[in-house]
Amino acid sequence: MERVYETHLLRRSFREDGKVRNVTVANLSHVPAQTIDVLRQSLAGKTLVEAGSEVTIARSVPHGHVAAVWAMAQKLGLPALLGPAGRMRDLALALVVSRAVGPASKLATITAWDDVTLGADLAVAGASTDEVYTALDHLLTRQDVIEKKLAARHLGPKANPSRMALYDLSSSWMTGTHCPLARRGYSRDGKKNLPQIEYGVLTDPAGCPVAVRVFPGNTADPTAFTAAVTAVKDTFRLENMVMVGDRGMITTARIKALKQAGGLGWLTALRAPQIAALAADTGPLQMSLFDEQNFAEISHPDYPGERLIACRNPALAELRARKRTELLDATQTALTPIQAAVTAGRLLGADKIGLRVGKVLGRHKMAKHFHLEITDTTLTITRHQQNIDAETALDGIYVLRSTIPGDEVDTAGVIGAYKNLANVEKDFRSLKAIDIDLRPVRHYREDRVRAHVFLCFLAAYLTWHLRRTLAELTYTDENPPTRTDPVAPAVRSQAAQTKASTRTSSNGLPPHTYQGLLAHLATLTRNDVQYGVNGPTVPTLAEPTPVQRRAFQLIGTPIPTTLT
Image (cartoon, rainbow, N blue to C red):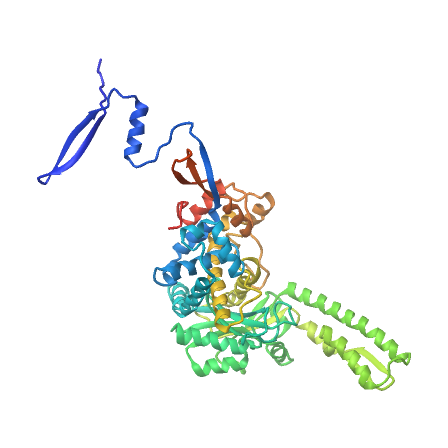
């Protein structure tokens, strides 16, 4: 019978006269196996403690959420975009990551760095207020460089073969009154009595943020659009791009300017008076176009070299008809007491009657649908039924105008490209409220306001990629169905509906909201484990949950113990 002999030798290797020599220091064959294993681990550099000795969790710090955002930042090459390695870059990166994880004021963010692993690992815990604001200023100096690289990455010919760039404008209110940018204007947040700033975001067709520009709060949409054109053509040096914007952004005057500048196309929609002109008795826009489908291409000599695409959305038509009826009824109800006061003699004078009536009509913007006859003692109100019927006939109809050649993008593709503006609206919701919380703006220096918006923009860029990467673990529809009718409202896929109803994703894990997923990742803590009274302290991660493991798998990185 064959015998097997096992020998354990402790050997020392060294080099002598250019040759490797080995010397046996001891024969450990008769030492217990567990002792040999301890010796092997000790020689490998591991710290060993006595079994049964006291173990203390010196500190437990949230780690998983900042680790996930930091890992995505590394994957996107964000640290290199922020500038050369050093203190300012570390602080700027910490500001961006913190904004994407848990938006707060700058002072609150500095305090929070002591309570997450981000502060210790990037050595920003304990940073002074002056340092943080200096880093914010540094971030602003890098804006042009960063945006040029993002534009090349996302709007260049390889990444964006359709050559489309989407642009839209939004606003946020200010808390102070001394900033030169703070002006009163049309508030998209419903804060009519507060000064505000406006900012335009340039994206690729999927809605990935590429650049941001800040304007005074009373800036008109067309003026902001001019800044976007300048950025695309002169700053980013992109040629033959198609600018996509809504009807308030790309006006007739802006299109004339685009024609004179050359090198850029456009995709936008006509305003209501222009649509009404096309729908005249002799015009090309007739209701028979929509007998078999909800869209059709038309032409008109007023738009030479452009494609006109008429669309009719039945759902939108129903919504507008119902809203108009409600507003007409509300206006009529509000006018009735005024009419009664005039009849009873309690309200006299055409000027006084007109003021009272004007307030009501301005409230619901229904003046065009009412015919008024006012004297010093009488008030007659009738509905302008002809105007109402004419507007009703065009309910749900919109007309796109574009320079996109028909041999490059078909009719349905142009409609889909215009509808991609909804992706920019999603960016604004993320930027302003649900993810980044840009508003309100509490800075008063113009450069700091711009730096704050740019900081939030970079955090939104990170969040946009994280949302797409982690879609499997959230309620996001990962594979929305292709629309058979480009005009019809979008619908969720069956898989997304199943995920929402069963609360189980395709991999069997429970889905979360995006913010809920970040909160769950934060439960993955890093613990400072001390062995013995005077023993070593070893940073140790808590055991990850299946959702936490899957999140880092989707990002494409192992769960890092430290962020360095």
